[in-house]
Image (cartoon, rainbow, N blue to C red; front, side, top):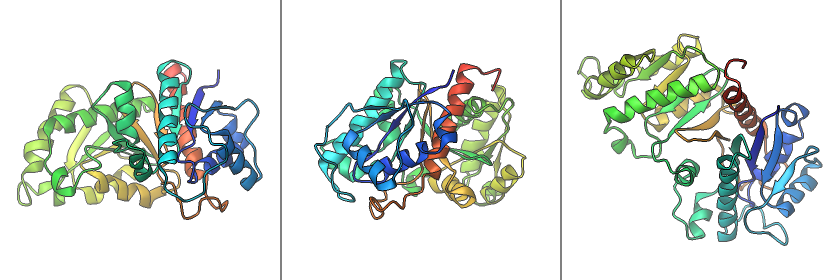
Length: 320
């Protein structure tokens, strides 16, 4: 049986509806799952007119939020669009929690627009975690060649350097679980150092020896195949060459830069630590090109494909 996927439309003023319509116009992507588009009929209708494309047969549109009498203007921040975008996230999350969808895929929202609606919002993952009743989540970036889990993401670099041994250990554990969920039967994990040359035995800082090494040892005691801390300037190359299946990065840019250089279009954001499967595009609302039929659906197709793969693996772990 095909997995059931809920796909949010994102901010109605951005490119979300366009990339959803374009992605599902690809017969190969459309055939992967049964689809529920969580969004607004008028906004999706506008995207269909602009692109000259349609949604696949059987795709259902679900709108748990504001109904627009006409689609809002492209590229403009508004509280109404921010409020609607959040409602789509909640709607898709609820479908997953209620067992009516096997995974969710999210199109981009604009944090400023959401804030204008009166909601304190730091990001998709944090909001979905709140809806799911969990606190300890991580970000994983993945493409066909590399997967990177992050100990921290949206923190200043100064704060990100205040490493916590327990948080590093939990990131390794979640990374291992994610690799298994992606069908990697015996994950090999590399853990980045924080400092140049992973500290060079204390010459360039003591965080690697005092925080990262004990976390790796604890993970190894739990049977996880992980090594490190390894110099961040070479570990990603080794992973791409097949020595490791997943890399644990200590902070946002340490993991994001190599992933986006390697394959920006196919790199997908996966939320770790949730009781549901959630993938996302790794680009923004692109207000500057919204409505111009210029948005590339490649990243959305990758996010949809990975969500389907994870849903199938969860349903039949021995056959995927």
